[in-house]
Image (cartoon, rainbow, N blue to C red; front, side, top):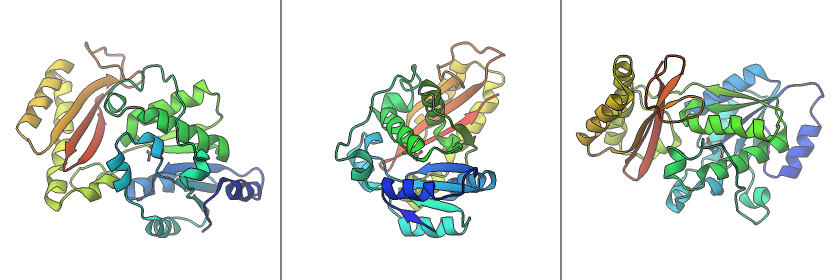
Length: 281
Ligand code: PAF
């Protein structure tokens, strides 16, 4: 399996592929788990060749410690990908190769999608995501690009970026993959203690009950109810719980039957941020 580390080499490799073949892209930051594997498997099923990028993008981290602690498991990642298909190209560049010694993000207008939830809690995070995703799409020119719904806000922002910048690619959102306990799969789960990894299943359990309650109660009621659940669970510090409409990510005040809603949550524990979300209707 080719593991390519410079954009020049990648361009050469892509140019050597047979014409008229479809190309998929799965952008990742490595430390691959079953959630990534599901994205790659879907991409492999739908494309002749798939590029999996593995790049811990510095411009999307507002917290230096989080960036420094982000796991780097390239060798294991390659083994996992080899087990999925031979038609995968790994692109694992350095920050200098991508940013030409100027590690800075572009500034985007995401029409407010970046002002709530993750955007409100992580300064400039989505400008960093936009910068690297736009870069990869323009470099690789895939027919389809795959993103997990665990980062649902990111998925909506990527869709917005593609339309605003006229990039020709189909963006495919893929369902959240969960551990047996219900905890959403994340590379950051590895940093939790064994006990906390079990206890963190409470996040998804609470989302499921919130969904049930949203069927009959108002959004405000469900918000208050959820906040109370975490007051009784002081090991898991609730950063936000928000119910928004799916398209604009605007927090809902009064439910409208025509709209689709989703609940979003971020919890901080043992120095790790965990996020999750669930479709409500
Ligand atoms: O979701 C991620 O892992 C990252 O935000 C992405 C899309 C690979 C950009 O660095």
